[in-house]
Every structure is written in structure tokens, then in C-alpha cells.
Length: 202
Image (cartoon, rainbow, N blue to C red; front, side, top):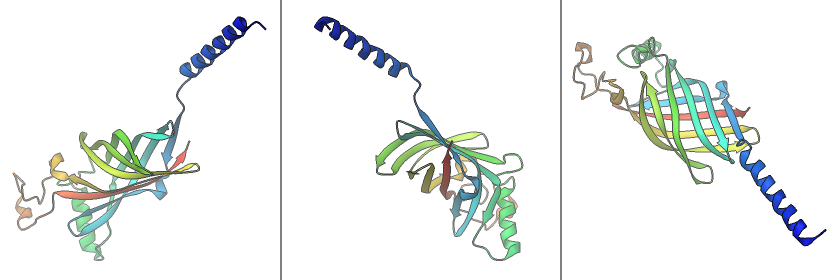
């Protein structure tokens, strides 16, 4: 084989392989929520509780997560620290009522990521919108995302949200229009949440 012909053939093959690689679709991997192994934990003042997740998805590209979202079933909000059934039920009914989360009209809350930045090891900085009452408020927090075989483990602690950002003012010191029943009731504006998800590769 002549050297010039060999070089031309090699260049042609190189450009051909590059073209095929560049035009091929990016390999995305999708992980979906395992519902019975995932939940949201909340705390406000001295009370704690859980809420169930109904959907969740994390997408990977180039071996890194680039998209995360989940759906919270607000109708399942429960208190975990009160033993008295009457007091426990009263608190849970208040949280579900229209003075708080109004779950009859807004049974779902959502998180949709905008950006996921790899920090170190399994630690990531995540920013995105928490959506309540069809209103999204951007939050930034840190969490861990760990891949083990076909399972993905997502954990985020100490996400702080301010309920008054969505005009949930019941019991707030800054409530502009307090109800008579709120007299003597002070509830923190901040709610701390933690998200634990187990997802399976699809």
C-alpha cells in the first residue's frame, strides 16, 4: 500500500468515526423513585413528621447527575412526636387545612432542579424550585447522590424553607391579617425538611 493512500485512508476513517460519535445521541440514564423506601422528613419548632413521595426521577449523563425532581403527596403529612391521638389529629388536620397547606385544593408539592454541581466524592450542590400552590421558589442546598449497581441513593438534610414565601401566614409573628383563633399562637416561619430517596435504574 502506498504511503499517501494509507494516510488518506487513515484520515478518512478518523473523520468517519468522529462524525459517527458526534452525531450519536448522548447516553442518558434515568432512575425512578422506589416509593415505599423514600420519604420527606419535616421539623418545625419542636414538632417533627413525615410526608410520602409519590414520584421522583434523577437523570445521569456522562456518569454525573444533571436533573432531579420529585413530587410530594401533601395529603399524607403526618406528625411523629405527639402521642396523644386527639392533639396529634388536631395538628395534622390544621396542617392539611386551608390555613396551612390546603391539601384539598393543592394535594401535591414539587421540586424541580435547575442545576446540580459536583462538589467532592458523593456530595453535590443542588439548586431548583420548590413548588407549592403553583408557585415556585428557588432554593439551594447540599446533598449526597450515591450510585450502587442499579440503585441510586439521594439524601438531602437541613433544607430550610420559609412558609411565608407562599403566604402561609397562620401563627406567624408577621401575619398581616391574623385570625381570632391565632391569639397566643406563635409558629416558626421556617420549616426544615430532609429528603431520602432510593431510585432504580430504568
